[in-house]
Amino acid sequence: MVSRDPTIVVPFAGVCDTPKCQDIFVYLRPESNGIAVESALMKGIGKVPNWQDNINLVYLANLPGDFLNENGVIEEHYLTRVKFAKFGKSLFTPFMGRIFSNYYSVNFEDSEIIGAYKALSVLGLNEEELFNLWVSMDDMLVLNGQTIKRIGKYYVVNSDIPSILNKNSSKTDIAVMIFRTVFWGNDFYDVILKMTDVLIEEGILDSHSQFSHVFHYSKGPFEQILDAIGFLYDQTGKHLPLKNIRFYNFLMGKGLSPLEISHFITQPLLQFKNREGHIEEKSIFQVTKDLSYEESWKIIRSATAQVLL
Image 1: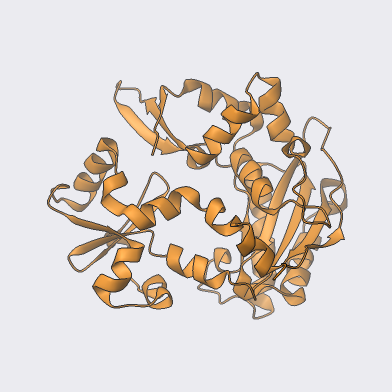
Image 2: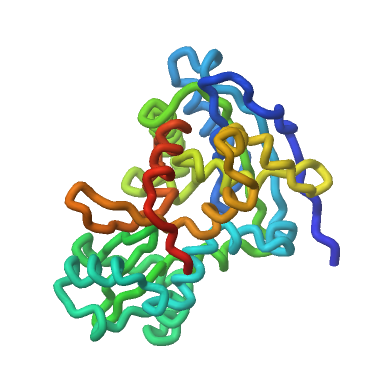
C-alpha cells in the first residue's frame, strides 16, 4: 500500500537570509491534531504586540501518519531516547552512573535500571499506563536528555517513548508549522505562553497540564535542524534540502561538513570541563537551548569530546 503524500497548505518560503531571523518548528501531537488547535495557536500569536513585524508563518503542512511510519520519521526523531528506552542501563556512561548514584543515593551497579520497553513486561503495564504513571519529583531525574522514573525497586528510562511511538500510527496525522521570527530565547517563550493561554481558555488544554501535551516547538538551533530532518517536505513527499535552514548554513559557513552536522544530531552527547576541571556531559540539544547561533557555536567549540552510543 502506497502512503499518502503530505498536504502542503503553505509552501516553505525558502531560506531566511536576514541576520536576526530564525525558523522555529511547531508541530502538533497526534492526539491533538486539528484545525481547532491550529486556530488557537494563531490566536495566541495574535496577542503578541507587533507580531505582524516579528513573526511570519512560512510553512504549514499536514503529514499523514502512514507517510511518517513508512519513512520511520518519529523513531528517527527520538533516536537517542529510543535507544535508551530499548537498552536502558547498558548505555549509561560513567558520568551518568555517578550522577544517578548521587541523586538517588544508591549504588549504580546494584540498581535495577531498565528501559521502558522492558518495564512494560516487568511491571505488567501497557504503553499508556506506563506513560501516565505518576511519581513524585524526587523520584524523577533528567540526565543527558533521558528521563528516569523510580517505580518501586526499578528505575525506568524514558517511560514516555513507547506511548509516543504507539500514538504515531498510520491513522494519526501531524500538522507542522514553521514560524520565522526575530524573537529569540525568552522572547519567543513568551509567544509560546500566549499560545498556551489560548489553548487553556478554549478548553483544549487543562490548566494543570503542560503545553508539550499538545504541541512541540524547536527549543534551540540544533532542534531546528532535527525538526527539519523530520518534518520539512514538499508536496511530493520529498525532503527539502537542509540548506534551507539558516542554522545549518551558519554551521557550514563555520567549516562544518554535512556529515559532521549530521553526527551532532545523531550522537548528541558532548563532554565539557567545568570550572573545577571535572568532566561533565550534556546533550547538544540541552546545552544550546534558547541560545543564539553564535552562542551555540561557542558551546560546541568548547566541547572536549563527543560521546558515541
